[in-house]
Length: 126
Image (cartoon, rainbow, N blue to C red):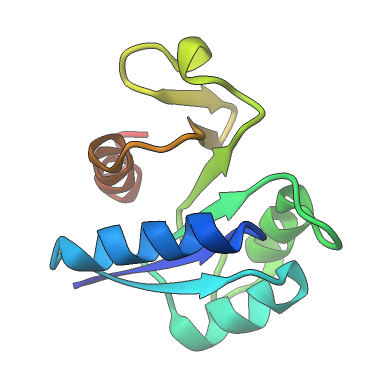
């Protein structure tokens, strides 16, 4: 079972994502809604992938991403950005946008698109 850490300040969204991912039987997920707790939670949970929002109060997704890259225990964990900063119209059919080493999926998120993006990101396709 793959471990997914969901870091987003939107409590309702994270609960829906957790329920849907856990219900597939392929994932065990954990939620972090307070960005300042993200790194400690990641170190403790040891995720296989991190779903990370960009716009959050306190530390934003860029701050957390930078901290992850500098942490020897977390630097190799793939990150999938979940954001409303790109639209599903902008992402095209695969619903994913890559920019440099960042891979983004647009909100609102469809479960089928998310699970494919998770698998692709963890396998190095994205």
